[in-house]
Image (tube, helix red, strand yellow):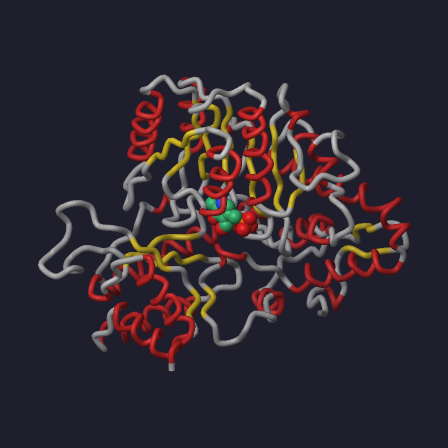
Length: 461
Ligand SMILES: Cc1ncc(COP(=O)(O)O)c(C=O)c1O
């Protein structure tokens, strides 16, 4: 794929041994350049789901291909002279971006799932080696990401640990509501004298999507004697401000392929220097075992490391936007709030949280008449929107609270929410298409149950 900017050339050029930076373009990226950068997106799809898999501009895909070719051209030279130096450079850029103290605190790993395995494996060993007692606990939000819950099951529950689940209120009106629930959950979990060994806190929950007051929750964990805090911030970098020292957690992971324009897959895992730093290990053991997590992670056997190597080019891409990453995230946030309000007004529904608790994603209530009464219903609607309307958007089922249900199952209370995203490539038309699709379903009297029957009969026909 060609790089559409700078007459087909990236601002990074490669000679045999080096990647050096040419002088930066003086003007900001234009609307038509943005369209070219994302010209590989399938036409006709209103892609308002950047949150799930992120997006990667054409110039970065081109840079990635150059790195892949560099390896294939002379693998030995690449391995002995380039790879480690360039990964260190990527880590240094991230270290400065997130305000870590030292580059040794920053590892590049494949994704948030891998980071969770690294942290939870360490907890599992503490149980296995008798440093933690049977029943010692891990705390998590009830809506923690499914892969992370599975990791808890594999590494902690299996080793004899217990799990304290904190319910995130939703819809939610303020940070105070989240803080109050967290305190309640923690107190309940500790009531029978359990030691809380780890709290896993999402910075931005996935479904439903809410920005969590992580700094305050980390402080509470410290006050309550929780040993370690792991912030799962898979969505954070590029969509909220990240300062790891300010947040104060022991471990903090964010994907770079969601909101930071890297190709899949790469994430940074920040591990604050501590006495256990030497005992954190990549779950794939290779030559560098024992040399520190960052070094272990930079060689886990022969594989494609290009997504880690393009980090400098991604910084260059981002610097083409006014205000850099802060400018991008502010614009995305403002736009997604505006689009969320437009949809909620059109459907006569509500937003799932106030704007200040939204990143570049927002939860918008769907008309109650769609009758979303289960996770399956939500998935059916999502599938139908993709297949019949070309709209890509995740749908969330929110069980009604006691006393909220009307005369018919779904009367009068919002049980379905759409999670809409905004990234630089989105236009108002994407959201108008979504609005009109839902309006049409409502006008036609379709419910998720009917869609489910339709999809089932198509599958069995
Ligand atoms: C909160 C959260 N944690 C973890 C993950 C897992 O990310 P990945 O699939 O890149 O490992 C996600 C993915 O969306 C997420 O939203």
